[in-house]
Length: 142
Ligand SMILES: [Zn+2]
Image 1 (cartoon, rainbow, N blue to C red):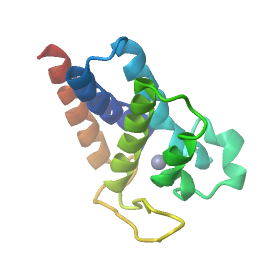
Image 2: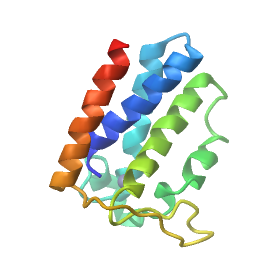
Image 3: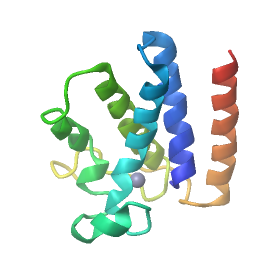
Image 4: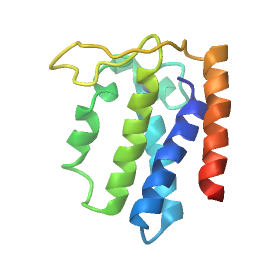
């Protein structure tokens, strides 16, 4: 899944949680989620950040598992913004689960892969992106 689709999916998830939890600073909450939604792809040489880090990480390996944000629990302070971080991160994993390549959510414990029907960057993803943007706009307006 490409960057813009991850961002639009993360926005939808984060905005839904903002409506439920009403954090002190909703803008920061959403921005943290958006930022976190881009982090797993630092293991990809074709991503913006990945150009600098991907040489020692396997694409869609550990950083595309549920364990990666769990490790960060030990380093980040306990706050509602860590929840925002997790929402953004998990939205990325959910998005990549919809792609043909899929993800292994409990890697390296298991190599069980969850995958979907969309090729990354395909017309199907374009349609999905437009659908997400429409949902994002609808979520903001209601
Ligand atoms: Zn990814």
